Image (cartoon, rainbow, N blue to C red; front, side):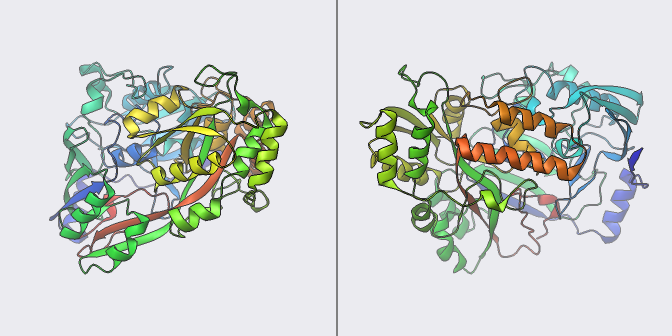
Length: 524
């Protein structure tokens, strides 16, 4: 029997006593100037790591990542594998929701049922879940569909709801951003986390206030977070420099030198885990009803070969991105350096491949991008559209806000689209295999927006999902990445730079490699 234990159950009173004796005094507000708005207050409404990371301030999971991105107890204090398909979790006692309701096993079961419902956009984040059974108020068993090695990774961002609150507000079923399904949880929240939800005006402002009754020992002194989406990069930078906002997680790469020279702002930089890539329509027809040339490997090769990643890195990304030849970053388990050499740019060879495939005169297709999902996304898409035009292709570039573009991409209304994948919250190659590369089937392929099928990738993904031997599992994942590269299932572009900026009067503002601000670690 495999077991992991954390013997101490931190009580709310103990946490508050520790905070009064040794923690920083709560005193400071933060205005967060974000590059885009979150999709919803419902963490199950859309598989956006950006939205989910913001909601981590309000909601919590059974487990979480610590400062070193290692899994540690959160609402669960311990767990053990009691059979090949059953995990038992002991829950933290004396935890209350922001409305005062007690946290129990009933809440966990209701949350797991909600996130794994057939209508849940986030069901792919819990692919092996079968059912949950209450043992007592602070113990439950989670049964899986088979042996599965990555349950804890999955659970890091499965936020736990208050069952009573869900029932009272007719919110037992998840909402769905892409389908336009809204509900009480879209605009309200009630979690156990370090900050409480106060109010929300979409695209304008979301307000959080400190939860002084948080069960954990606070490591911050932030009393209030004002989250303001400012989609214009120029406006966001001006607000930062003038002191109107205190923090942004999206510093435009071209503005980094100017911000670094400002006396009142500090810039934090590192490489993101997120790989930005292009997906392609692989259905029989393009969105205009014409036969789909992208089902010909030679066409996909030509499209990939026409992209000059060095030019994008040097000119658009100001030398701060890292060219990618595979679909995961080097620090992600399953990565193989041998697969990471970017394809060389060859315009003439690309033209020759199109001619050979019977498309020497090119063809029209829709290229759907958002303008703020990824660093310099609009400029990247403009550059790639121009590069494709050089080989005779006729991309119809469609750029707009995420709220309009994401439904087009996810509903098959794009022939080519942008996608960024950091393997969050799993931090393992299996994440992109199960959710992006696998055929759309049950919990698999939730982000397979192109509608492709590759039997070998499906076979390797399913085999890896039940392999408890880590080395064998990673070898399967690497092999699947090799198939994806050879068949050009997606076109990898780069790992994007990660640049944050914060007012210089913050005492401690840790920057995490998963690009998720965590204000419960911030002091000012």
